[in-house]
Length: 79
Image 1 (tube, rainbow, N blue to C red):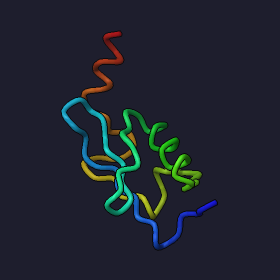
Image 2 (image 1 turned 135 degrees about the vertical axis):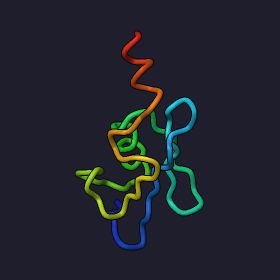
Image 3 (image 1 turned 60 degrees about the horizontal axis):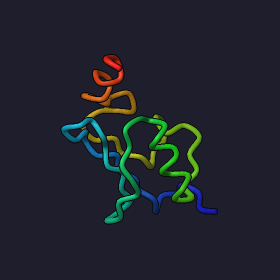
Image 4 (image 1 turned 90 degrees about the vertical axis):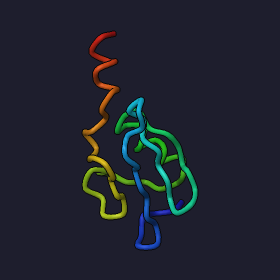
């Protein structure tokens, strides 16, 4: 089981037009997230266990933090 260390650098990219965000480690796309819980699951599936993804030093949030999912919250409110 891998643990987050200095060699790991995960990027949660800025939201796409639909509000989803790509999650990468280096050149590898780990998955597409539509909610902060998706980021946790994507990292778990990659054997990168993080207890607090919003405060982790090895995750770089681009285009907004873990609470920024523009476009998606509007769709959820209408449903």
